[in-house]
Length: 146
Image (cartoon, rainbow, N blue to C red):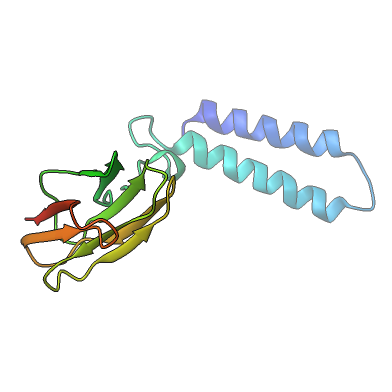
């Protein structure tokens, strides 16, 4: 610590002690002055090129994979492919209920009421998973996981 910053810290302590005056809480006032001096000294001793702990960037969590299948006019509209385990949102813009049901043990089968939204998780293994609407078997699609 340089002589100038030491003098500034000492002056601050003097001002704090003088400002608190005499009271029944002299012990707490003294400890508050010491805490203030300690925090002032520690903040003045850190270099400007090193950010404080509170200013350091925190690593962000990996973004969760998401995709959407939309049902409009009794047709599925979905992504070309998704990653294994992707969270898939199904939005039914029709008034009639529909399902998204894997045909060959794809592991997904959700029902979505008219105007509603549901989610399911894509299979964890890559592959092509044909699906249908069990209420309207002419509605078909394929979920490609890769």
